[in-house]
Image (tube, rainbow, N blue to C red; front, side, top):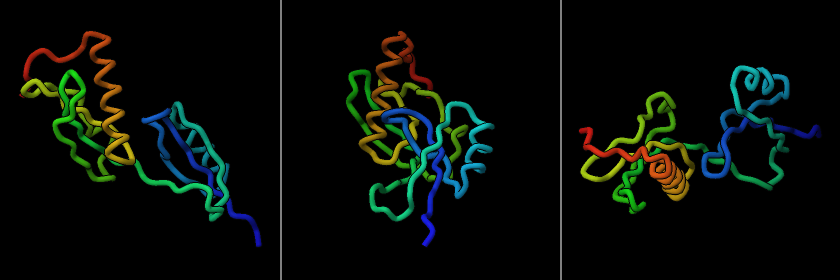
Length: 129
């Protein structure tokens, strides 16, 4: 029996790492990658039981400046990247829009964005709603 291989196109690192697309041929994966920046191709043998993959989904995480989570929402996997909005202040809390596999990963990604906003002195100062 011929060995079956899948070529996964990935992007991001650590909590923002994810699979963007899967292909049955290396040629098709290269065509996809050539049209997009910062993508990588990973090769995996099908059904070897070594890994399980899940799809990243959009999440909205509401937290305060200290990193305390107020609320989380999981979006639909069909939501497009362009539909995500920048962080906005509401009653002292900021809504972060991230892509992640799990709620835990989404909170971590939102916390990284929170830390960046604070470090760059870009934390919103007025309610925008």
